[in-house]
Image 1 (cartoon, rainbow, N blue to C red):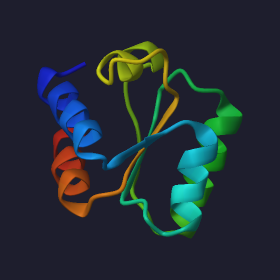
Image 2: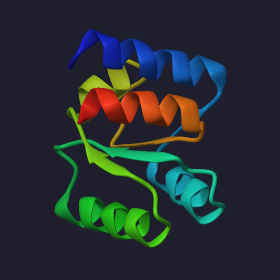
Image 3: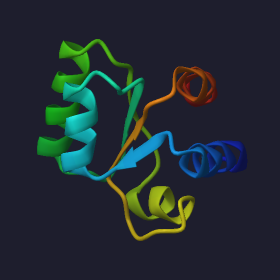
Length: 99
């Protein structure tokens, strides 16, 4: 995982613009607060499909990146399968780094 991506995700969490976990990620999508959805590459196909479809429906960019342990480690937590950024500035910057 790129160190710049790790740093930006960590900063985003500290600023309070990052939501993790399936239920809270879905809630952020439904409430239209989500600006970017990141799902780990080792997530189940069902999870990938669910978040891909929800992201398409709510017109939110969707990216598969890293594995669950890497995503959790950059946040100082255990494995995380889904991350949702709720700030447009952070989301745009991260999306440019990932694509």
